[in-house]
Image 1 (cartoon, each protein chain N blue to C red):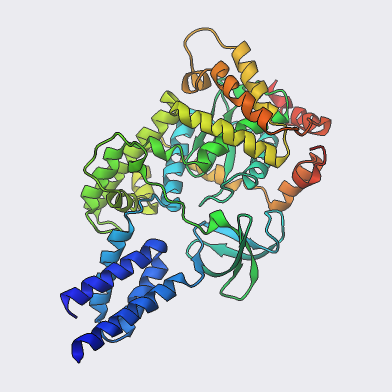
Image 2: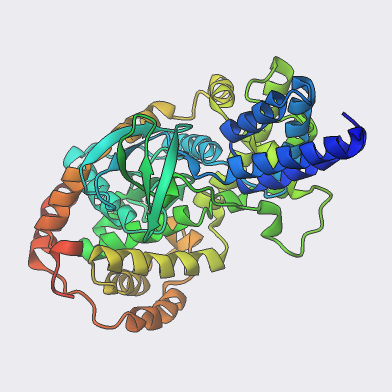
Amino acid sequence: MKKPARLTFLITAVLAVFVFLLAETIVVKIKTTSVRRDPKFTSPAVAAIKAGDTVEKLEARDGWVKVKTKAGVVGWLHSTAVEVKKLDLLAMDKNMKTQASSSEVALAAKGFNQQVEDKYRAGNAAANFAAVDAMEKVKPTAAEVEAFMKEGKLGEFGGSR
Amino acid sequence: MTARAKALVSIAVAVSLSFSGCQAVKQGAADIIASTGKVSREDAQAIVKTAEVLRSTFAEITEEEEYYIGRATAALILSKYKPYGDKALNGYINVMGTAIAYNSDRPETYGGYHFLVLDTDEVNAMAAPGGFIFVTKGLIRRCGDEETLAAILAHEIGHVAERHGLQSIKKSRLIDAFKVLGSEASRQFNSEELAKVTGIFEGVLGDVVETLVERGYDRKFEYEADKLGITFAFRTGYSPNGLAEFLKNMEENQPSGPAAGWFKTHPSPADRLARVKPEIAALGAAPAKLGVRTARFAQAVKNLH
């Protein structure tokens, strides 16, 4: 009795895992971004969200995903903020023979993080990270971009197309 | 739990994880397996670990890692070139570049897009992984209007969208990294591991910077970025002729002496021009250039001349 029952249980457990994983819970992969009221970048932000946050996927349309945050706020995120694009570096060069499997590359890539940057900075004073930090601080708001597009009659403000 | 059952669950979880690939889900899977009470928590973790190794057959450099490679690449570019201190001009290219990024195939990157004018007469534009985009004073001087500069920014966004910078990394470095890390994907290294991984990181940066600054991308990436740039600029509402006009200017005004900067790292303007013309024609009716855009461009670049 034991064995088949156990196997049945295991199969059920496995199926449960499947269902869990197929549930429409998605993870934000962008450092910080906004959930927007409508599916466009110039739409007002309704919630702030950061890498690792999970949201419930409600609907997908034209490159945008309608989501519900843990706080219950409903809005839109661009699909590139939540979907993982696979890049198999070893597959890029079809002629290259290598011993490494693509899984090895993925594991290798796990290494580059803040700890590695700190160590690198300590040994490379010439690398101008201060200028990079300043560069990152310049970030136009969606309202500024919208005003720029409106003034220049770009995108939806065009009409000359 | 029998070995056979364990293997069965491992495979199933591995397949499941292949479709997901996030830490929270992995932990969730381990919790679910363990919560049944039929499998010990230790076994559950082991199963998920096995699954994780299998999952990563879909190799990827995560966006966060791309960001760190991009930051350090940008830091090295900024050790060679100084930022140009014109805040108004810098603000102008950032708002324009962001508008184009919004209309690209990859509007969101881990740290977002950032644009910077470099204080050099050399003609050049570069995109570090993740969205750190540089254009030189020398290049902006070669642009006659907003459409032309938009075409350059759109081309660079094309490189970022397709992750061309990461593809210059020598495969052997990633294999070396694997040798250091073994099968454990760690977030916190001990000092010996850290030294080794940092060494590999330096090698990776060497590959990327050499490609961006010295050697140039493979031609096929430049053609691809041209094609994407035309599309992104067009979607934003710009005339796609901007790129053709820039290339024509570059072809007609090539500097004498050994090729440097843009001329060294890019295929010949004539070659690119021949390829982009049919792409532009295929878009059909193009948006017209507008005086209001040309006027604000002239205002933004007034200190350059």
